[in-house]
Image (tube, rainbow, N blue to C red; front, side, top):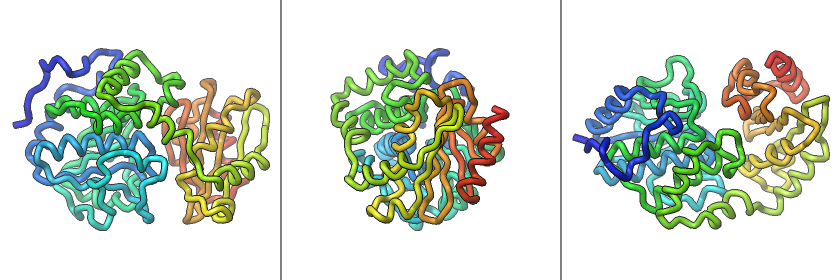
Length: 343
């Protein structure tokens, strides 16, 4: 059986300030039983993975592999490629393309995904799984998963992944800590967002104590970009609009193609646009390789962009959310303005 680590001194405390306090103890115990009884486990995170999704998945993959489990970790993008900013993460030898993911797995554990749709090409495999454990800090969509380890108060899925690792009897080492730290800093904006609690800093301290280099991780995540990014950013800022308390712009696939820039490289544009003093809400529309618009939204607190995006088929948090639109730029923005008005 999986070791009972409830009395382990190195395990982070479960308090109301920590991650996972909203998850029933019975759910954690059932998750351990499911993992213990499975020989092969599929791990899946959302398409175009960010640091929290990929980092959480790889951290748990290390632990499962150490337990002797056969692990197949993947994400469902048609162009299966780890975003350049995350290629420093250890454990990528455990990743397999969607075509090599089990067709009808005994057990799947998903990370940072609240719906089947967010899993892309892996949505069908996951739907056919006998059991699906959802590890996430976004509220799970109806019918998604057979067991939820979900805490919407957690600042990052990485916080729940750490809890799972300890409950499985695992220990933090530098590789696992690097993966979890990437998730923690990504979803807290390098500890700048309102989700940053004492528990976040306590977890960061545990991770840093393993000897990881926080300066090197920060440089990989935020201080590197190809020259083409500057050109695409310039195009986006050239067409940016300020409408009352809304600032928004868009990036086309033609913009990216002109400079050979993959879609994953433009995630940071929203962080430039959101700095506008005069705007409460920032929006960036990003055309993906299939021609759909991926809409990223940020709020400074007065507007619930999570509710607005959920009404349009997406989701997220109060201050950060997104969704996919198949309409044109102006129609997409018209629909979003209506929902933002309600929020």
